[in-house]
Length: 94
Image (cartoon, rainbow, N blue to C red; front, top):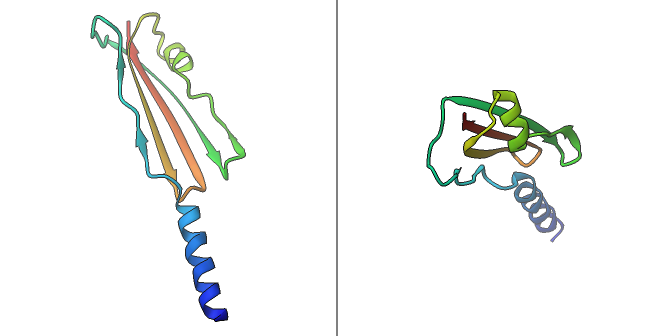
C-alpha cells in the first residue's frame, strides 16, 4: 500500500511539473493586412513562476524595432517542464 501511494504521488508530481505545452497565439493583423518592412522583438523568461524579468509586450517589441505603425503581432510561449517559461513577442510594421 505504501509503495502505491509513493508511485501515485510521484506520478502526480511529474504531471504537475510538466506544465502546459508551448502555446502559439494567432497573429493579430490590422485592417490593411500590411506586415511592413521592420521587425522588432521583445522576450523574457520566468523561472518557477516567480523569478524573472518579462517585458515581452507589443509596445516594447515595437520600440525595439523602431516601429510606429504596427502591421502584425506574433506571441509565442515556450515551457521547459513548467519550471521555466519564455515569452517572445514579435512585431512587424513600418
